[in-house]
Amino acid sequence: MMFHPVVANVLAGIIFALGGLLATYFGGLPVAAFFGSEGGVHWADIAAGIFVVGTLGWWALVGRTGRPSLLRGAIAGALTGILSYPVVLGIAELFRISPEIDGALEQAAAVSRLSGLGLLTTGFAAVPTMAIAGVVAALLLRRFYPGWKGADPALKLLRWAGMVLLALAGALLVLFVWLTLMPLDLERLGGAGGDAAAPSYEEAIASFETSRQREDLIPINPRCASKLLLQESRTAPTIIFLHGLTNCPAQADELAPLLFGLGYNVYVPRLPGHGELDRMTTALAGLDAEDYVAAAEEAIAIARGLGGEVTISGLSAGGVLSAWSGQQRADVDHAIAVAPFFGPRVVPTWANRAATNLLVWLPNMMISWDPRNPEGSPDMDYAYPRVATRAIGQFMLIGEVTEGLAARNVPLAQKLSVMINEADTEVNDRLIERLVAAWQRHDRQVDVKLVPLALGLPHDLIDPRQEHANTAVAYGLFVEMLGAAP
Image (cartoon, rainbow, N blue to C red; front, side, top):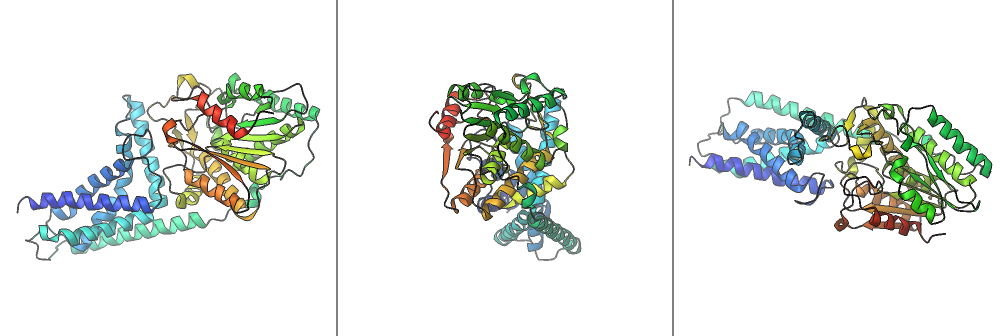
């Protein structure tokens, strides 16, 4: 009989882990394969993290005292639901931990921030779900404690603890509902719609020069200046490429000449706040969704003035603006959204609106893209190693508004294309699929290009200096989406 409590602790941990895995599955959280794939949270991380926390919580409240009451089980489960967030994320980072103290501390800070985001947006469901798992564990494991007579001297304290946890779950539920139901101001980001007359060729060139002059007033990295490659013909089609968040026009250093060689004018504008010489700048924290939408509209106006058909494309955050343009701009002939970042992979689809409003509402924080390397890649000395949480929220807001507009109105662009990278560990693909479905409900054909998982392409599949880049494959897929060369 002396061995039974130990067995019970382990079994309790297994029950909690199974409960957590089922909740994760039915909650729709995009999770990576059990083992093997790089980046993101794996099913094994979730199972291991909840098992460890659940086993310790059960031991502290039940196994150590030998009192497997339903209340103790529920409290152990609720605490497991709260504490599993940092432990699961910590296990996910464990084998990628930085050998440098600064890097390790930044990883710990990143885990704390993501844990807070997860708890504030999905904790209302996780806490009671794991409490129920604790009740189930208490019912199933009572026989391991034959000496228990039912008396519990700590009952009053436990009831207070249970009430506190119940109040916490209720507060999280109220917060989630409030964040989810906050109305979207669709008109705020409605844009011009493409009704304005196109500028002349000369006016378009002058507008580009004016934007370049504005950049000259900012200490930007010379590689990050807006780029315009012009064909001799004034009827050549134009393709706009919008770079990703914290990157700059240097991202398309190799893609732009390729597209130019296919006969396109190529315009790669610098999005506001990007490309500054000081890579630790906080400029992105001071920009709103309207600033980015205005930049996309300015780029479209310049492209229209160059004379030919207009294609707008972009990666990640640039892909969000491309999708918005496809929805709102009748003067866009083709909108191509490459791995658009409508929301992070670690947030389930149903919680994305709440996460968006939370990031917009909370004070800004600067977080490292790669906590193991807070200074960033020396090969990409034009890209910011940190991102403003407020900027992430602004692009997620544009995505939410785009879907809201798509639910009501027919998309205005002539042709719509979307690229989904199955190996992407940053983007929630289900949000992309949700927008595609909204467009298709208006009887619009959407060209969806699935990049197979086996190719292992990174989220940033455009920048040739990105780790694990394979631009020969990625650019080939991009050109396929673009269609036949003019």
